[in-house]
Image (cartoon, rainbow, N blue to C red; front, side, top):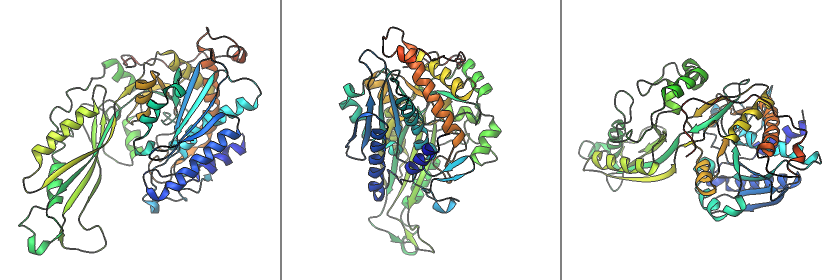
Length: 477
């Protein structure tokens, strides 16, 4: 094990690169600059920071021949806020190692995972042998806020980013010893709903009961978003959902996490949600709506007797196959119009659009990834869907016309977005080995490519094991 690799990962995790908070703008930029310098230092070419209206995008590449295939590696160096800071038992940006774990915000999501590919490239470059294929890297600083500037970057730089496949590591293994290859993601739509009433805060003793409280109106609207059975109650919401086949549901039941495991990871004793589906199916096959933030009125200590002037809620939709985030937006706007009481006014501000994504498990690049996992972990991966959303995969599909392999090295309970986030160092090393194997596999994937790509991989022995296709899974759109 290369202890220098771990020390460098600690340096990367130590940057408080919180993209959503303006007070950390300098730290986000410093993290981008550190990454650019590191990529340059390990021997990559064309390293530069692309400015955006928000945070910079780091680009680097290593080209070995115009006739060789090209892999585009994506990762993000920005992280979520640490609140509640008091819930952490280690400094959020201390990059503390306890036993086999490295703790810190972003250790798993996504600094540690993206760093597996960086270190694999470093090992190949230090070997003195040519890379088995062309490689390009795009490391983003705004993924945690919905990648608002990545689309424009991808559209503007199609030629620069031209590739045959993409890979990103920002998903989970099934367990510490069981790798998993993700073939589908839910989409997303996010918005903020604001209800306004009086022009200013009012004394609740003088005006309470005489004017409609915006918080009360908002609470009623939010309560109407779900029915008693846990289904989203917005008319038409489920109309476009493509139902999973019986074969796919059977596969996911066999290889997905057990209900008890999922609830244990969530820290709850009882599940909730749409009837007829297991907790795992609800998170990966079915759409959902979560109220992720609520504000209005006095938030300080003690009492303040006021009727607030306005109240707001943040809404996060996760979308199933077939759903369009723009159509969901229109359905929500119609719902808000129907449920806004006349004494108040409601506005809806859209914040994120991302369609669902799926790639066929039988696609050659997915089979190559399966063989790479088998080499890196010593066993073939199972196939899984993820309930999360990664907007970049749809961008790459739409504007570059390439599939993205979701090759994760995190764990379901590693604290992503929560306190005491960690990366299991065992999977850091396994991730590096898997990335090395994946590069070799891709170098061999298309036999029509000629030297030096083929010659540089002549000694590689591909593993025979691969992920078994999940029955009934959709083809790449």
